[in-house]
Image (cartoon, rainbow, N blue to C red):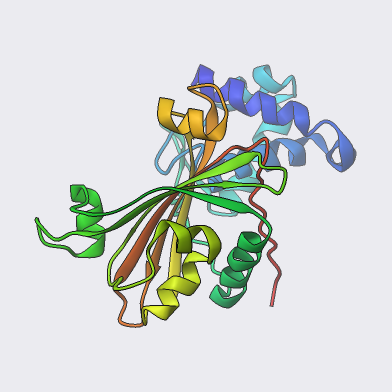
Length: 257
């Protein structure tokens, strides 16, 4: 509970500035607690801090703390039980962001036109078990693995890619992969992408990756795993991307319909 309260206090201190500084104290406290519940920081069925703990941590009155908790209960984010305290009843479930595939693929091709690609290796080998499972391969079935490094126009490396692709009959040569967008080579092999799923996380740079990206080993990198599906719903390509955040930023623009 102490660790949670310290984390919440950090968010509370941020809320004391800007437009939030002009709203009532109870609403500021309510907003900090609500955000922690909605993003899963305080998980489903977890016990909430007591009103006394909230009052002491955030230096507010018991009345302010009670009103913030009452607001959470009114929105059915928490339930209050006599003798057992308050517990979170909201169930956090992360939802994938959905965006048009065409625009994404166009952006990837455009990025390729303004960068330099170096193909480190192009092999046809049996992938590890997790990749075999994603691609629906047999134990001894081989597919193309390509390792590439992408640099900006100043020749500063910023991206390290490892891709596994099935269904490639032609075009996967170092020369082609360094001069032609990989998506165009997939298309020339009759591979039409209908859906892409990607997961963003972080990863520390291992020795070979660090050398190719010109960073120190252990440097925090942006990690993206991208799975591409064909029109039959089969995964045909798995791409693991590692980016140097000093030279690359991943931006998403979302709008309401």
